[in-house]
Image (tube, rainbow, N blue to C red):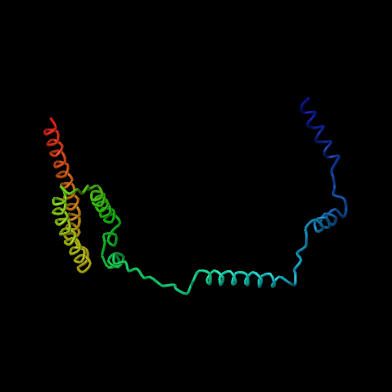
Length: 194
């Protein structure tokens, strides 16, 4: 039965072939043109552009006059750090891997410095460690200049990395000393309160 139905529908379709009526395409294009608005160009289009420019110019002049331009002073801030960074030869100029090493140590050094708690009791100890740290910083700059002048070599790169390691170790040693000092003070306070 299924086959009969398929054949029956097939025959029915063949009988009813629909043909497009004559003039269909012309009627369709006519309706399409009527539904789509035509682009009308105005003679006054340039007037809209000129008016926009006048509004923008008047707003900018108004803002300039209202902002008090009579006593404007220009302040130039010199950032010596940026100039030094431009002249310094860094690990990043040599290799991205060396830059990562330098960034790691510098970040840890800065982190340790930020964690330091300065008090009147620990100021002398911190100052002596900071003096040693400053000497290492000066040595690092000297090595950096040497790297810039002579070019990269294994000895200078190793010395720079060791300098960064020494600074980090120095700060960690300072942190241990401060903790020992703090613990000894706590023990003294506990002993006197008992």
